[in-house]
Length: 180
Ligand SMILES: [Zn+2]
Image (cartoon, rainbow, N blue to C red; front, side, top):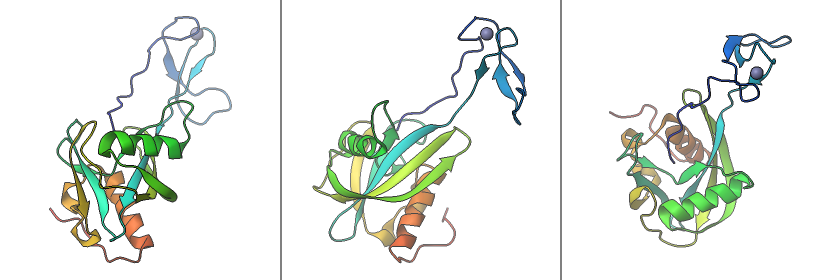
């Protein structure tokens, strides 16, 4: 998963005038608008798709990140969707790239929003078809028993939320408060 700063032009993509902030007619929020041509530059979150790969013995795979933000922490494979991909395809592609792992039988775990960076994370569980290996932007893959999930070394709040949801759905005991 690469970082996504809210990079946007300060200038109208239609007429080149400088954008300003205003509440467009019929709207309820301040937006970036062009007072010259009326263009409204909406800022929308970007979808990320990821997979919690699970082995037959019940262990799940996490990868250790080698890129900022949160380099060195653990996360399940995932990344930004490309145009033309379904969420499932993006999740499987990222799992191949980051963990050299193929998965099957995807099941939706949930959808988690990171309001700060503007990211919507779509998380599946998938049946692992191999053992995996470190790949793009990862230094290590490790199979964790559910009770050994490194709650205090996870990459993002959404990582924790997704893993908690996954554990709840499996009826597993999870710590109430994150350690550390
Ligand atoms: Zn304009």
